[in-house]
Amino acid sequence: MKKIVIAVMLIAGIVTLSACSSGKSDPDVVVKTKAGDIKKRRFL
Image (cartoon, rainbow, N blue to C red; front, side, top):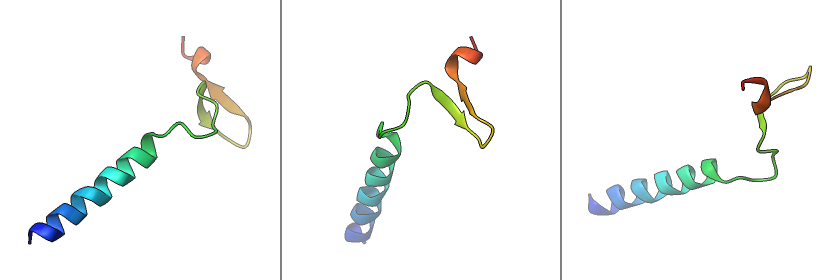
């Protein structure tokens, strides 16, 4: 039982960290669409 809980928590942690990584995307882009990108400055 403990092994399953540890495995699930480890997988959840890896998924969370991979989702929060910056990657190669532009940090100012909020939404990407076919028509164009919506950037943060549009909301300010």
